[in-house]
Length: 191
Image (cartoon, rainbow, N blue to C red; front, side, top):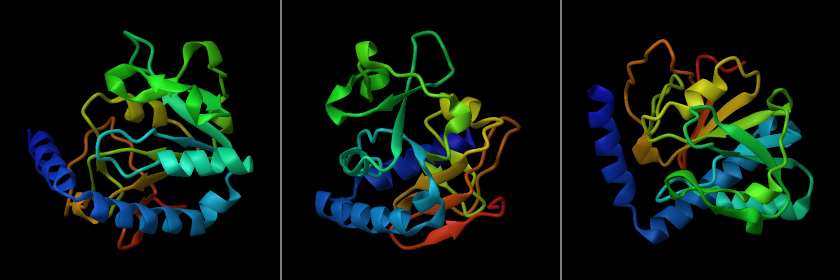
């Protein structure tokens, strides 16, 4: 119940940001991500494709696809399956609305990718604390996917998405770094 209350409050704060504020914050977050050693070293990066008022990943994905320096992987969901599937993409235009309206690879271009080869996962969420705990959207897709993954886990969030403390459950998987428009937080579990 507490998570649902936090989710609702944080989403309301995030949704109240103006387009101008989001644009400015997105630029700061992107620059901080690009300057992170884990990002610079990563050869393959899995991104959530931003939806609604999430921190924008679409421009980052497009830039990386244009540069062709890193493999870009995005998730998709098969109906009735709680496990995220992943596909390498080469063109942003090969994405179409899928589960919950989120952009996913078109079925005919899905190019499977070995999840063990993913160096870095950019993890979505509605709220984060300084220990790397997160509240997602309540579906559990990312916790299931990240369980046992050796990839670095980084969250992108507007500063309004930071909360004091998130109570965790056994299945919750924390991130190692939270990047906001104001700071880069190296969490307790950062290696």
